[in-house]
Length: 244
Image 1 (cartoon, rainbow, N blue to C red):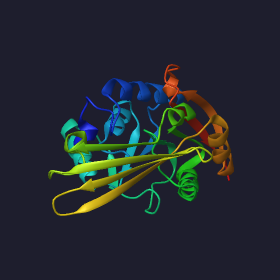
Image 2 (cartoon, one colour):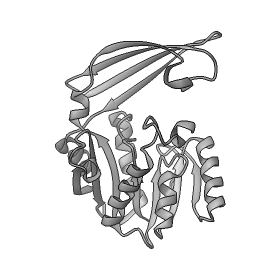
Image 3 (cartoon, one colour):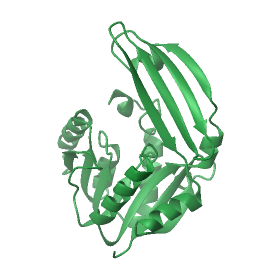
Image 4 (cartoon, rainbow, N blue to C red):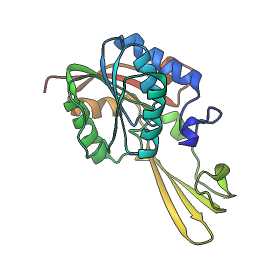
């Protein structure tokens, strides 16, 4: 949560100016005023609050109770009417009859192909016929910039992994055929050693379009970097749900 709210680092959320630019891009394509919107993986509400201020009726879903608690308090303090749910969007009930579903900051990319299929079906079921799914994914230039390496650090990322003193080994693996990377973190604390495996899938326009088509979506727009042609590491996609 602290990293989501830290405006100086992009480790968990984009800086405020970039978030505003993303919301501008979405608003220009959907006219948020009056729209029924669900933000999947909403975190502490950085996008949901902006959507609401533009006149949308918004629900936020995240599996972090800590982030949802912050989002609820922030909305209450600002006088914003936003529905928040602690839920896993792969397994728990999700709201239906949505005009727009958003999932921002490449949340599709850590999911395995089977999980992506489950999620895309669920998003399709959430939307009204003709409703819009807007999201982003990591693009191939981001994959091509990754190298296999091993890093070692003391209290990496200013205590990101633990409140205790710790050491971290980071092993990065790249899989060219699958266009997948793995960052394997080994965290060594005084009383325990544990690991985190962070897999990421990278896409080109053809592969993400094919996945969407296979689950009843039609790509309406696909651009680099939320309209910023200088950012080729991310693709932003607006897709329309078909009737079946």
